[in-house]
Length: 283
Image 1 (cartoon, rainbow, N blue to C red):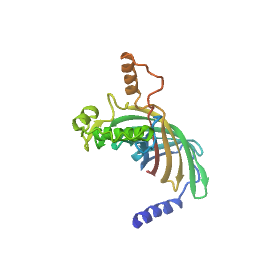
Image 2: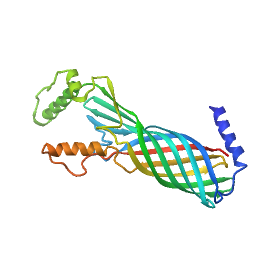
Image 3: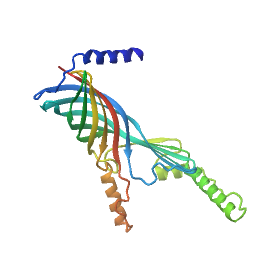
Image 4: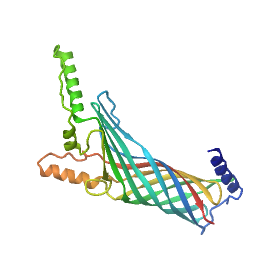
């Protein structure tokens, strides 16, 4: 690890000595970018981050990876547009614990993404500070959603009856233990499609899953160590409900069955990704 850190530091130090003080009008640069960070699916689910003794719902980050090609072109001195074609892993994880039955769903969403940002270079001696902002479009190319069930619905029912018995005992007297004694393995599979203590994989894109097209806003700041090396810290904010088609299908089915559908009641899911990238320009 020390050798790797020293190597990276050496690249920055050597490059800094040849840093260009300006991005001159008409300059065109081409490079390779690699990086990663943290990503999750943001929702307006009312149960998100609920944490009670018998019920919890957590929305968690998973690792983001990205890499691809970038280019930039300066329209005027120090003001330039940057574009690229990158491969991204996005998605997230939810963990729901209900009366001892824990369901973990990990969603991997792989995209080909095209960001287009406006950048302005602020020269700071041997370095350049580069704020950036702009849109991105992305197309989903694959991914799996893994659902893992720990425990059983029978165990969950036992927990619910235990809680109900405790509540009745505390309010009206001693009713003893209310017990629901059923292991529920077949019942689990029928309702969830997952056997107890097992997992299943589904496609992340397609019918009943995420839409392939995504659109959002990229914000970040870059630090140019040289003409050839730049470190960028940024954030991608998805602006579309990535489950919009599945949500509409569910609402249409509910309406067809005569059930009232409350406008905006479904969880709106968007990608949020915090990332860092290193760009190496080819000159």
